[in-house]
Picture (cartoon, rainbow, N blue to C red):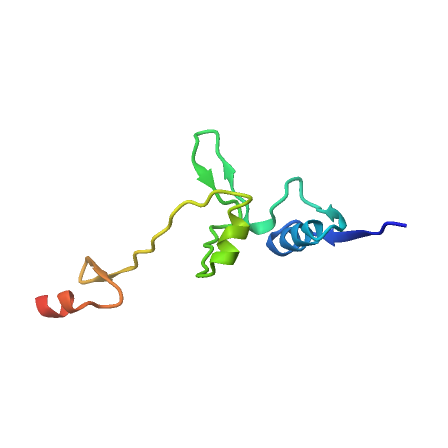
Length: 105
């Protein structure tokens, strides 16, 4: 008799467990209480065409080629670069403070 692995929740952890189990040859059923899959890390396209993150943005970071190979099987990723600024005397300055800022003051 074949058994089925039941995964509760289709967020990042549940979806990963379900996919790895399926890839290993197991029968998998995923239960999700929300109307869409993806948990808190999903996004959706607004009618204007803008991509929105209903539960806030999530940034995926890893230096592992093995993990990148895995996740790119399911979705393309948009590049992201963070730029952090702080307000100093009414001007947006780099944070943490750079040598350039020190040289100017």
